[in-house]
Length: 220
Image 1: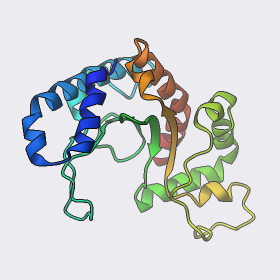
Image 2: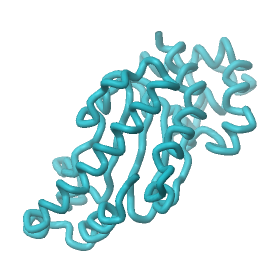
Image 3: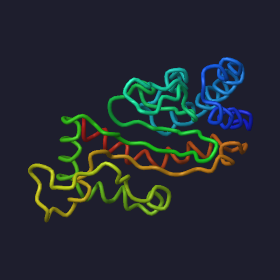
Image 4: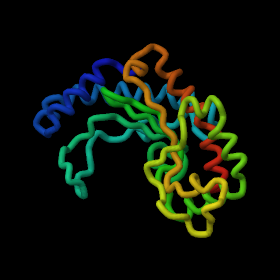
């Protein structure tokens, strides 16, 4: 489980997002990060039984993202994130393609996954697969359990016009217009503090697995 102290650290970091405070509380950060690493290690073990492409030997350190923000091209110059994030795939967090994601934040956590903003060639292949096998795609996203848990695929990144080569009359045009193929399920922080937190997240990833498989097949 994620410890309450980990959430307390993130709350305090949000209120004191500066290097002096962080250095004074570096020990708290390290304890919180170690808690997240331990938790992600248990997630990997559970997920590997659902998705054989994820090795049970995957190092959690290759999945948990750094707390430090890249401020080079951002107007927001606060040096630290106010959350922990973990990306899980065959390559850990540095995946180019479908991956699982867990977001840990004191106010709102979430389970997510899919292909976030795939590069042009990969995006073309995913659209092509939806074009060719729209019925299979629909069976996945319209599945009762999947829809109840995730709702619709995320709509934040979407073309306003038709993608090249596709007609407005295409039955799957609203999905073909997507530039990112991801789904998200919100979790309350208390769910990650509970004793069954690992099971809760793994069950979410298990619901995500058919969607992940479709995307993998599309780009393979």
